[in-house]
Length: 236
Image 1 (cartoon, helix red, strand yellow):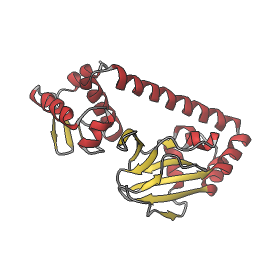
Image 2 (cartoon, rainbow, N blue to C red):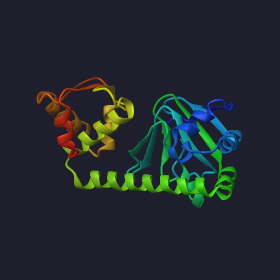
Image 3 (spheres, rainbow, N blue to C red):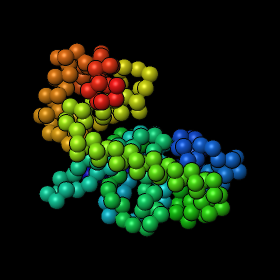
Image 4 (cartoon, rainbow, N blue to C red):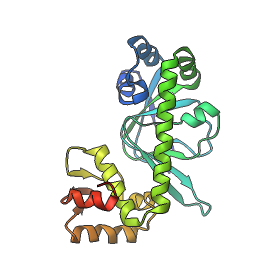
């Protein structure tokens, strides 16, 4: 993995960070201005590390643009992809609130913009505004529910259903109103994310192609039979 060569920018793009995240979406103008004054942005290139597993955090991170990969090292030293973060997602909150080491490494999957709020500034805002604190707790609860749901997907479902669910998730994130979108990660990373081998992934994609459900050209995916993909995912 590459080391970070990010650079800090001014706060010009900070309001868009605030607007993207549900916990901040309903802030009063005075609160927006306060957060804007303490928020900083950083840019990362593909492959650069935002933080490593085991590092301690003093900031809340918000994805403004691009995609972040969260990875963990397995006992054999291999890197395992456990989650993707898209614009509007926030992370680092558990290390931020509990002062614990990061449970995973965060790596830029492409050119990425991150907004940061320092721990002391963020906690001060939560103490001063119970409404914001309540929304933040709701957002944390939603994240935990999503994590539990994905854990169930990985442990209880067959590879076909895991793949279908992930493809529909990518579609909702990348192009909710279109049947065509670009896979945000490589097929190798996609295989890792759904707990399959690259060979199994290739076989499943060929099967979906042969059945007329979808076609994949490099990383460009086109859904032909939307109902069939939802049925396979168990979401019909």
